[in-house]
Length: 91
Image (cartoon, rainbow, N blue to C red; front, side, top):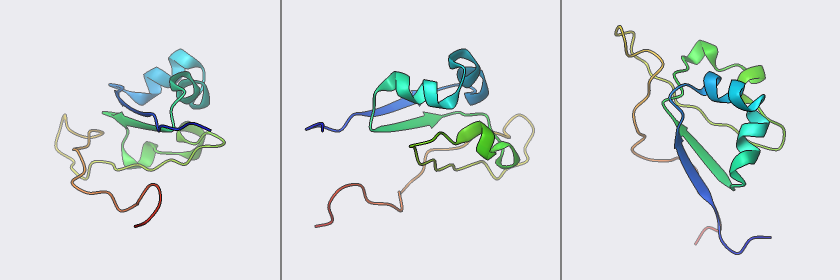
């Protein structure tokens, strides 16, 4: 067990392209050897977030998709202002 937590933040500029490069989401995630991986600019719209694309055994996935239909902005998401989950021990 690790004494430190490794968190990776990665601007993928299109998650489907990155998954294709690694052959699967699981391979992509495993390449980081991280406890938490955060992807930005996945370029996925809500209807494209399907289990076969974004789920990998042994991992939990959480997505926040854009709510705009503005041309050229669909599939992009801003940075969240707060997180609803706590990681680690509650104090």
